[in-house]
Every structure is written in C-alpha cells, then in structure tokens.
Image (cartoon, rainbow, N blue to C red):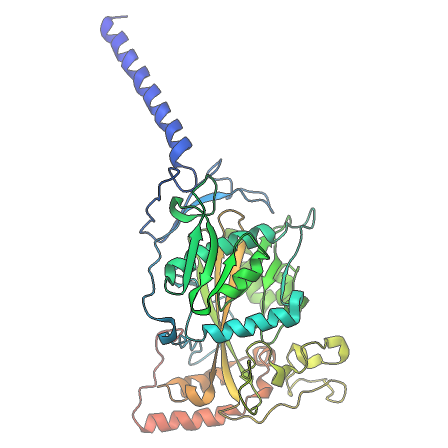
Length: 457
C-alpha cells in the first residue's frame, strides 16, 4: 500500500469521525423540543411540519392501535389580530347551497391562524359557559379515566390541549390574553424553546388561571367560545370520546355520548346516511390525520326560539334548545321520543304516545340559523384528535337582509332528503320557506345580486 493510499484512508476516517460527531451533537442539543436550551427558536414561516419523533421517524405511521410516540413539531408563526375584541363581529357563515343536498364530511384545509375564533360576543359566551359548568357540572364537563385494554385516559390530552390553547391564544390575540412563563427546561410545553406557560389572564375579564391548578379542561373551556371534544385512539383502532367540555351543544347532551367510539356516537344519534356514506371514510381520516394538516368544516340547522319577555343570560337558547327539545333533564325513556328529532311527517309515531313539543309560532323573529364551525387537529405529544365546535346564531329576520341569502336558504331547505329533514327537525320550522321565497322575490325585483358566493359565506 502506498503512502498516498494511506493518506486517503486517514482522511476518509477523519471525515467519518467528524460526521458522526456532528450527528451526535445535533441529536443532543438541537433535535430536542425547543432547540438549544435557553434560546428561543424562531417559529417556522411555513404552515407547519411533522418532524422526527423521539425514536424511529416512521413509528407513528406504523404504530399499533392505541399507541403514540411523542413527536416534535415545528409550529407555524401565528399572525396577531390587531383589532379590538369589541370591534370584531361574528363571522357570517352561511354554509348552504343552491340545488341538491349531498351528505359528505365536507372538510377543508384550515389555516393555523384560524384555529380559534373570537369576537365581540366573547364575554356573553363566557358567562353562559360558566353558568353551564356551575349548574350541570360533570354532565357537560368531564374527563374519563383509562379503560385498560380498551383506551387511554383523556387527561394527558386535556393537559396538552390547555398548553396548546394558551400558546396559540396569547399569540393570536395579544390584547386579550397575557401569559407568564417558567424558565426554559427540557421537555417543557413551551413553543419555540420558551419556558412553558405558568398562568394565563383574560385581560378584558381580569381573570387569571394558573395552568397547573385545577381541571385543565375546565380552564381550556373558559378561555374560548368553543366547545371541546378529545378523541383518543383505542386498541381496536377506533377513536373514543374520552374528554369533553360540551357546554352549548343545543340539541344533544354530552352525558349521552361520552366514552363512545366515533361510529357509535353517530349511529346512536341517527346521523343520516352515516353507515353508507361516512363511516369508513371518517374512520380512515381520523387514523391518518397528520400533525401539520388541521381541517375545518361547517354544518347548519335551524332553531325555533320562543320569544321571551326581557333578555336573560341565554335568551337565544344557545346552550339548550328548550323551545324545541323541552326539558334537558328528561330522557327518551321518559317518553320524549322527539328528543331524537321528532318530525310531524314521521309514519308510525303516535302523537299521543310521544311528548310532542308545542312548537312556538314560526316567523322571522322566532326562527334562527344555527351554524357550527368545527375544527380537527392532532396533538403532537399524545396523538389525540381535538375537535372544537363554535356555534353561531342569527335570526332569519336579519339573514333575509343579506344579498342572495333568502333564496339560497329556501333552496337548501327544499333540497334535504327525507332522512336529513327528519334529523334536522324540519317539521318545526319548515313553514319559514314561504317567507324566504317572498324575500327572495323582492331582492330579484330590486336587482339584487343573488348568485351563490364563496362557500361557506
């Protein structure tokens, strides 16, 4: 072997040693959550990405059911909202279309900036949510323990969700939320290498919550206008409703669904065409939902609200549709079969044997559009899927002033298949269609543009 060959071998060995040292240094100091300890890493300008887990990078793609390996996640930069909270109007979602109605999941990609929406109704919603927790307790706010061999507890995901909300909200709405932090430490919940949040203050309400004290899901539920559901994968591959703060569901009760897998929640709720159109695709979607691809969807129905004297805390029946559903505390076994969606066109339903509600008169001031904006995202540490539900209510008397809305709304009401109409209790408010037709005709004669806009608005 020549001297030149020995020199080449020595150089190759030196390069290999240096590369190996570089990998070790990267793994030790850079690849851990938060980057270099004590330094605040800059947030990514992209929409988010899935980084290597603490172990095999493919571990969660090939994981066994009911398992998840904590994954490092590069959070996107959150753009602050500069408008004052009292000036932010509720977003006018109008998620109905002209023409035929189709049963689909209807999901769209969600921008990270738009995870949680706040508006000028925040304080009113907060009061309603506080009152619901005070009066209903665990019926509307509860975390289930582990069921060995079936599914893990929802508590670790509730803790992670609270930290996620505190990080997001304090960045998205800096005039509404103020936080204090602990010193940076390895494995903390802080974003970008910062120390994890110790407490969060809702500035307009002058309320401070210490994150390590009390029920994390209760704190999370009072920080936003959203209902929260935590879905945890079980050993059978199905996702179970293991924790929830469902305070303003309107027409269903969390106590009836908590602990169920996703498919049973929908089947027990008589969701139209779930088995034939949604079950398989929904199951696959939950299993495959990536960390960096949150989604959003909208649905809608109508609600009849009896006119009341004076304005109470929840006169619009945001939390429970009393005018349509009756007493929230009664169950189907008490004879209230209509709790599942009574429709006067149902065959074989004897009105004498079911406590058919005495619906209020139908008119533009008593019928409300009720829209849900729902988001779905996966948490990186626990792998749980978080389901947020924000409810928007608008009186029909206000809706008909919007260009094109009354005609499109009438078309949507007529387009529902019979099973959808029954599910949405069409019999309670279907008479409003004639009024919508009248308003549409007036808009057409006035030359108002009535074409469909950009869904879901």
